[in-house]
Structure formats: C-alpha cells, structure tokens
Image (cartoon, rainbow, N blue to C red; front, top):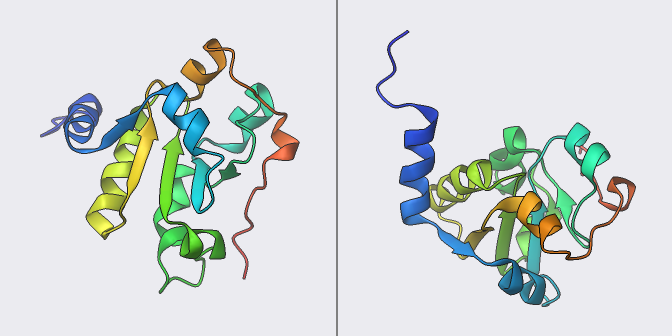
Length: 139
C-alpha cells in the first residue's frame, strides 16, 4: 500500500505545531480551576495502568464529537474548561489530538511530553482507572 504520509510523519508534523508541557508543568496545572485534564487512552489501557488523578477519560476516537458544542455527544466538562491538557500513553496520539483540536479552534490546548508512561516513570501520583470518570456517549 502506498501512503502519502506515514503515521510517524503526522506525529512529527503535529509535534512541531502543538504546545508540549513537561510533567512538572502538568502536575502544577492539573490542579488549577478551569483546567481540564483529558486521558485519551482506551478503556483497557486505563484498566491496565491506572490514570492521573482528576482526569476524565475521552478516548481518542470520539474526542472531536465530545468537544464540539454542535454535537449531540458534547460533554459539559469541555464547555467550561479554559485550558485543555491531553495525554495518551507515550505522547503521539495526544500530539495528533491536540493538533486536531487546534484545527477546530480550541485554544489553549496542549499535551504532556512522554504521556502517561513518562508521568508514571516520574513517580507522580497515579490512581486506579475506576477513579477516572468515563463519560458516556448517550445524552
């Protein structure tokens, strides 16, 4: 199969245009009012590894629909957020997601360098996945 761009090319391009924050910055910012921390990993990843306290889970595949006020699947949590911090397992999916949200006009939006794996390696607090609200798709 011929591809004009490979997945890694898309990630590299996204990384060049999105804001990437450090683990230290993410730890500080996640406790600020009006900051929404969004875990875009799939449910099985949260069940296996846990998540960051105070995060909500919106899998990457439905993120655009959950943030769009014109979508019947829009979540109220996004409507009141002043800043959105995304993360995935290693930082690639969250970079792509941040770029897409920027394209939609969302600002400010950023992602965590190295994702959840880097967060966990740093010794930062982790919670069980049952503590992370998974937002239902039904309205």
